[in-house]
Image (tube, rainbow over all chains, first blue to last red; front, side, top):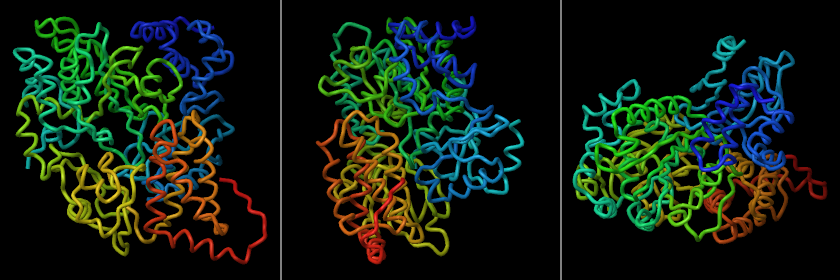
Length: 154
Length: 429
């Protein structure tokens, strides 16, 4: 069941476009914002609300990198793995995070605190290596900063 | 040196409020056109200015606009492509975060030029600071009467909305972007019809880059001649140039169009880090051909870079140094393109992962005889005309030029493998 708040936010997105289905990506975003990820159950509810088939909506949901169709942790770490960050050594950043949290790319920590994912270019290549945790961008990262950065996210 | 795009940006990069922006001449171009310029006159001025699209393709902006039928029934759409995701590219971020009103003013003027009544900012999800800045600026522009119904009493109407994406490189391709805005998978559309005739929701649509639209207010205010004279070459205007990689001072600078690669690298980026040598660079993002030492004095404008077999692209350069593996560098690029391929057409969907696997094998010193030739063949098989959109041909640009300039780096790993001849190769890229 979509909540009243979710429906209200989805309706706002529908208002901007000529027909309902055009707002389906917004609807997926709204639900993910509230529930962290889009479960099969959520997908069905959104599809019904948008008057689409579940399959059609899933074809859209699974196309985009940042609609999560699997459960994720409370905080998402996105490590840039594209060219400038590769040149500047993102791999050691990734390995240090793995050491600190105990998870690899694509995994969620057992306490559900973090999910760590590789991510294409974050558009801050002059300050590589870079990563995002939730809405926060970190650049020019050195390995010894990492444990302090992680402490901000409980 | 004039810096129309970034001159008014504060040192701490905080965006100007609408009032502050007006104090530095903001929204003058909008007032000017609404007082006495026809849409045709705006288009003609922009065409005359020789502004070329800053998203990478370098197509004449005025000419692109002129394909929109002015008398077509509304709605018509003006969209700014702010889905900056070309690896190595970080120029639009600055304009979005720190100069949102300049972009919005450019969008309103451009919408007037094609008589669009709806506009969207298609913003990359990762640009959170930009999203806040744009949201606030759009709201301020509505409150000031620069957006909405009957703008400044002129009878011209324009609505503007912010759409943040959910991550996919394909969204930067203009027809895929339109599909995404329609709530679909971001796969490219067949052209023709071009978006100028049948774009968003089947209506006439223009999609322009952030930097392109940010130039528009200045062209209207100062004229086509002024814009031409900003440049050192025949390509007009200033350009946001960037350098990333192992240089002393990576960064982003607004400079006259046509500065040389050497000036960018040695003067602005401070040269290579100590102990490293320059081997080459992708001049304008991941999907451009390598340029090497012999090209350092090439002027960084569209025709000059094209003349040496590459593309100016986004104008943000990624530097390859002599201690970084060429094969690893190209493998990283191909991994990106392979992952971001929409899978719609076969050469791209099947070819890119295969190339990645072979590069991975070579990188692991497991390359086999014939691998380099196979890679070379693929640069043709995935080249222009062989795929539905420009993603795979773009991916082939760094590969084909790496094979041209650094072939030995690829062959080196193959030779070392001779002793493994006859073993079965396992590739798990």
